[in-house]
Image (cartoon, rainbow, N blue to C red; front, side, top):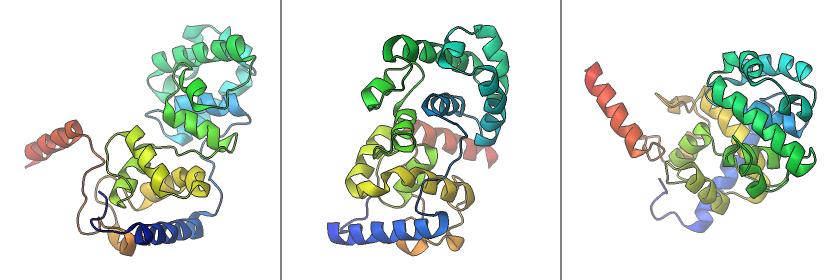
Length: 240
């Protein structure tokens, strides 16, 4: 939901103020949610994080990366055994298959190195733009915007994006956010989304961005796909 008649100059000033307040609360560096010692560990941890909490992933990877100490270990592992090792993260069949295949590709095609460009990263099994951009930013410090459910929701509510599609949201944010803020936008917004700007019943009255947010008077719902809105409406109907 872009703000109607907001000039480019006013939007830039609003964005700058939003960023300054986020930095004041969360620091001027990206926060660390997933624990990893190198690029491929963060890559696999991010694959495991789909539909799973960071806390659970960190519990699993603490043992996982002690058992499998190299990409070669993952590439040659027994798939069923790997499934058992990551079972508690959910969707373990696909996650195990993708991690094993990704490790194999990294060993055979990239000499054991994680590539540094989004096209090569997203060509790896189980790696989408969200994961690829996370690696580019957090490991290689290449400006990139990670769009997860929090970023999509809150960026739309702030009037800095206008789409339920993560890729469209990413490119819209690239146009309105200064490049030096791209990397830490994700972790700052995650922190905000977990505490105040939640999916259901956001705590607008407590939010330190409420005077800069056009959605204080009503959630625009532009961050939900039409299918999600229809599903939510049906659920509301049943509750009534």
